[in-house]
Image (cartoon, rainbow, N blue to C red; front, top):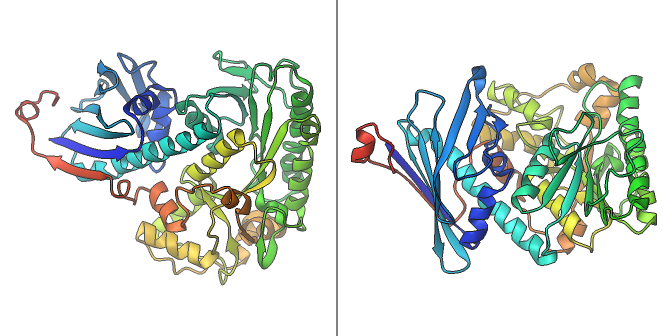
Length: 464
């Protein structure tokens, strides 16, 4: 059988093909709900080999072939006894649009693949639009150093920036394995660490989720404040170093319970442990700002991705029919889709109008009960189980429960909105549907169909 899907993107064919050629394209196209990991990206689309880890230790290895830039390339499965040949075609529609066609010759039913290809086309469409507005603000590509590049946000951000034509240098704590890695010591970074970079994105820090013991709280604080100050001091004095320092931060700055108060970027600091951590974390960037480096503190809300964070914990419960809000569910949840968060980081890098704290949240916060209902509808599961408030206290302790599970912060992205910043998924239902494989193709530009087997496919040959 041959499966063919297509959509139209608002980008010239050269830009679309170049996006696919760059490092990170495979990571951007891999659906987050699938239990698949990248073992190796192909070195090129002409004859390179890409490998994915599948459940059970199997490896999906695909060899690229039929390269015809900028119109076509293909990949053929070479590691498993399954017929699979995927042809990627690109057709120019004038000078500003491109039809993207994916045609797969395989016995796998089309309904099994629809969600995957809908996700891939939405990712491509959204990324190309984001890079287009970023180039209008800053045409030249950047060299960006990133700490925490192996985490949920860092992995996605590195791939996102790379496919946009930027060079990413990962700052790692082990010995470097490639020219695009540099060894970083959080306690005392090497004086040459940031040389030759245009920007620094600092994401590293110990996980916050966990029981708020004295040891855990110390790890949270010490892994953020000290290393951030060291990097800020280095950025302030290094020659040929970053002109912008974008540091992760959190909406925990506003404290765990602000009621129905609308929290803008300039709202006052709240109370509690996390508020203190975030305030000191942001203050640690001051040496760079004092030296004239543009500093942006990205106050991040609850990131929506099944690969990590709260959604990774909640999905199994909801799929088992055990989902629901904690208590009455009155708490405000300020959330953001992972791809929208990447767009915020991109704007922080290229938009000189941004500095200081920026709320990285979607424009529509929801109450916890509405979050549970929306997640339940997305997964086609009930959300009727009312979790007693004592449950998170058992796991997180009283302080951790108050600061994490029962936190209520109604945060708005006013600074981003004032700049006309576009959100890919401003509504929670959109973000969850995209992240969990329940959304369709890009609006008004897509078509999908399962075609009858061609004579070649019926004979068991690759369908070209």
